[in-house]
Length: 286
Image (cartoon, rainbow, N blue to C red; front, top):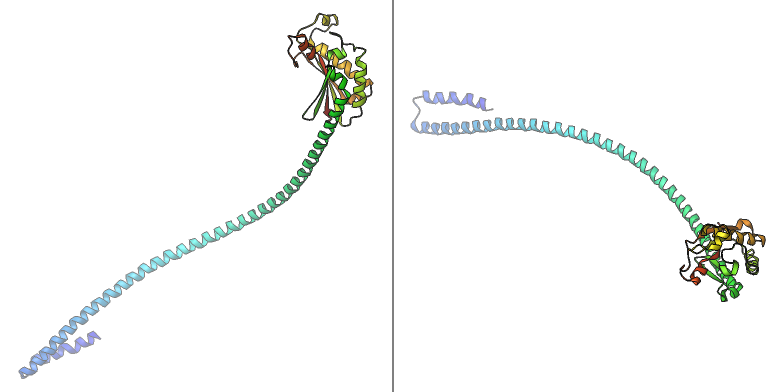
């Protein structure tokens, strides 16, 4: 539209200049119109320049946006790839976790069953222990009554510690010094003990021999070079007597401690007499 306008504008101006017969008023009017047209042309050129610049800016913006769109498209593609990878990983993890949860539930069920079984076993053990304690207490009371004469004469003691009963028989009750043959009077005490103990169920009987530290001349006459041999021989003699009186041999055992576990000192005669002893230990069967 602007080029068509310019084509008609310039011939008109030439006609006006060429016509010298035009009046002054008409000329001024035409000059004003020409000036107005000139300003309008300038404005149109400015507008055209701005339009061209605007189109150039828009083209550059479109190119920039195209680059951004391309980058965003690539980023979106990568995100989609990553999302698919993460979803696949999560599905795999979900499968593993589901399997682990199932296994843990099974193990928990097994442990619950084991705990119940252990609780039952523990209840049974506690019940058995309680029964053993009651039985041991009863046996202890009965042994005290059975051995009351020997206890009153200082020839024996009966003790209980953590369910273990111990009947201690000192040397004067069973043996002469240095001897391993039972005294005639020892038989009545041992028969009394054997008659009671063979009726006690669920127990074993360990016969332990003890001596004093100082070796006696009478020991050498009996061919026992140390307390080990003398204590062992005496323990075996008492064990065999109890077996003969009816206690099953599988419930019996003999043991020697020699002089290494004294009850008292080895200085006084009373102390040495207490150390020379036989202990009958009543224990639960294994």
